[in-house]
Image 1 (cartoon, rainbow, N blue to C red):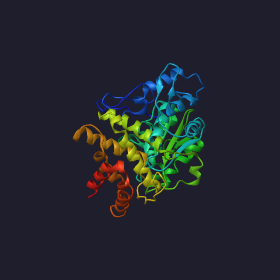
Image 2 (image 1 turned 90 degrees about the horizontal axis):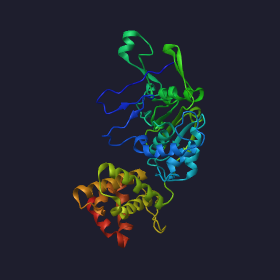
Image 3 (image 1 turned 30 degrees about the vertical axis):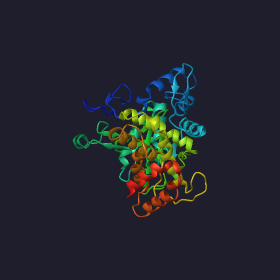
Image 4 (image 1 turned 60 degrees about the vertical axis):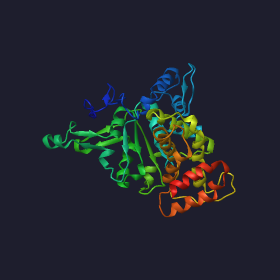
Length: 385
């Protein structure tokens, strides 16, 4: 059955091209979609890509992996890394999408699951916007389809009254759909995916019809099992996914690299100071987070207690970005210990009772003893008082 298109209204900030409802970038977008922000890289990869491409893919699997991992093309174009981690993880994820099996990106909060999901969809389909955001209140209609009730009441069930979900659109057009935080969706709603993923069909019993997926369709879901509100996937649904676990950065250097790259990108869009002046503070934030996360100092000599939060790489990026904003608007533009102290306190102390004890102990037994951390110790003491 044909799937109705939703056309953006004039002045809404989104326009559609002549393709299957793909939004185009606007000049005022604060955070452009991946396919727009990195359009020049995707175009250069497409021009240089002479390898076989699966049906309706914009790039070959090799080019998709290169887009995520970075590299230099024959024409000199530098493709920036979108994911810093084991190459095999990306290769398995891309290969999965080239089959008829869906991809589940699993990991603790802050391991770039959403980031990788968006860039995979952008590289494969040229459209990362077919998105379902999972929450405890996500209804079945968000995954299957809904109805325009004015038309439904006026004329009864019809194709014109049907409102397709992002998943239905992806099935009809042979593109990639995304579901964020799949384990936050109630279990009975999760299981509406079983028929879609196993039979590649979405029945519409009200119309006596069905939507069959065309070649190119696949689905990327993200999930974590660390936060509250997690609903375990049924065994039947889990079998429909190939699960790829995204780990935390293996080394401090890798994590510093990730934080630096993302803060530079965010800083440019927010017109914040250039990062070279704050690399030492980035390294300090990463060191604090890793030591509290691992429960031991980097030299292995001192055991420390871990707070209740995850202290992820994503939180480190937020702390540094917030510190840069403080330095830009209330300082001299140079990132200093006083600019990151409050952000670190907010990231560490989630439970005011237990986490504050953990933080104070870490300050006094670890930070205070480091000669080159005196300014940082004083700044943290000041905001912790």
